[in-house]
Image (cartoon, rainbow, N blue to C red; front, side, top):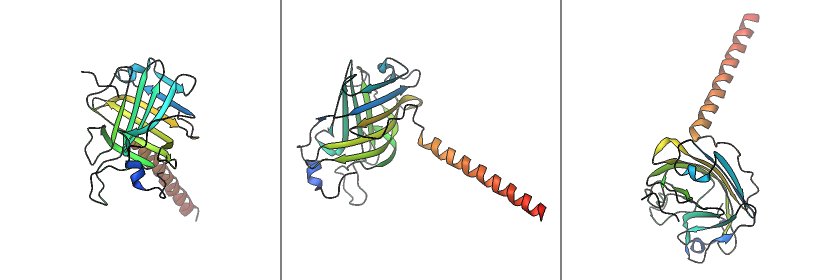
Length: 223
């Protein structure tokens, strides 16, 4: 991990994922798409407004647990012209059991993420750094689209889209679409923020409501 500037199968025992046996495995197939906002310090490390790196062509990918346990999340590393690290973690606190021992990542959207591993126990963690660039403070979100493990408890498949903001500045950040042994295509465009998706749905609902109201008025006038 570079320093900053200064569906888990139910048939596996949780102890498999908590053990130190899980390690980083070389990908069979992997790809990442990154798009930087102008002025992003970390994003500037990709060397272009956007890039796509493919396993075995541009570099190689490894996938494994954060700090030896998937209860601390997933760590995908990329070794090419530069080294990059992609870390994602669920909140360590589990309300259902009232424990703070970590949780396995699940498919779904994680919002209000903070810099891993310094995230609050009740907040997810994210940390993207590379090319010697990292943030002291960061925030963001990530959407886990796919995650599974093999019989030995190693990472089998992982797909995630994400956005990391630089130093807490929500106007500047790095978008990404990362796949590890996944058949889900990467999104070759800036990933829409969760609030953007919500506004789009609300907008479509509003248009539908106006159209329905207009149709009713036309029907009433005709009768």
